[in-house]
Length: 115
Length: 115
Image (cartoon, rainbow over the protein chains, first blue to last red):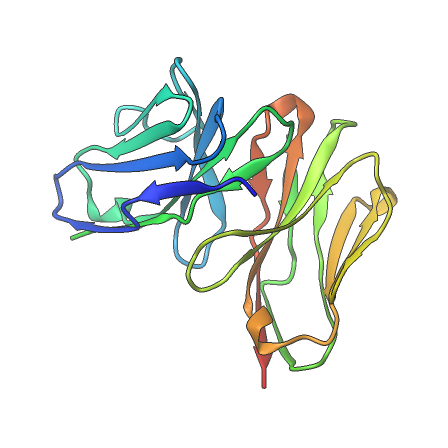
């Protein structure tokens, strides 16, 4: 099956710093990538949808200036959490879609801890 | 708007018992996809099944089976002869064809299988 990687898998940072998370589709071209956030013992919530070469579409309530998404190529999307605060600590998961409808492949997730 | 409800927050069974996880969904689209994912403690989502709205046939895969009933908007998941390794959080999810593969997840069911 299709493989999606995320880097880093775990990051701890100080409050006020920015953190970049990479999501790569390893063996297919992803025209669309999705970013989810999952707080402990909660479900996955879609943050934004990113299409290669265009601006990301953010879900209601997600600050686009705080969560910067770049989808510069068909195999790479990045999420940058700017000026991170402890309340941004969460599990961030990306997924990638190829040309098939309804088919998403998930990365292993990145656990962010902001001190 | 699409919505997924997993009413069972936690289920605890003893090994070898059968267990059914419930999933009820809401959608206005006639074309949609339903999914089940497993999330072990590591956090990585494991894809289990995808069903499209035009295929109501039940499916069996080893100890797993799924019952899709459009009349009740349900897509229930049964594990037969449960094992300790089945312990995880299970998510049901819905994607409407018109939503561009955006997934809406249910709240998840924590399944604990005790030896």
